[in-house]
Image 1 (cartoon, rainbow, N blue to C red):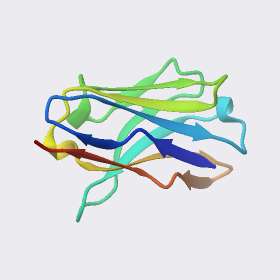
Image 2 (cartoon, rainbow, N blue to C red; image 1 turned 180 degrees about the vertical axis):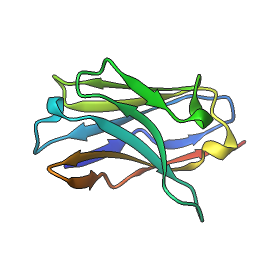
Image 3 (cartoon, helix red, strand yellow; image 1 turned 90 degrees about the horizontal axis):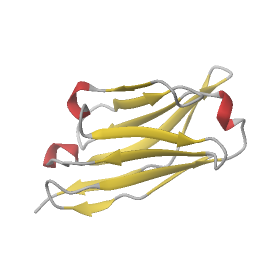
Length: 114
């Protein structure tokens, strides 16, 4: 199970930290991803982190602003979002793939607006 939290309304230029609490699988063994989906748009991969947390990848649209991290002892995935822009408005989902099956959280809404 994946449960996201930390979304909300923030002004442009502001920051938010999303969390994704994992349970029911060996969290430390799997790469984790953050996706987002804006209204009327396809779901977009935002950031990826490997199982140990030592390797990450960000989409070009968020490079230099978002940081993905994880705490394997707490079984929690994070997304630190800085310098937020209105175009970052979306529902953010955490995701992993276990035994060929994609697992998704319920999502958390991030709205960037003045």
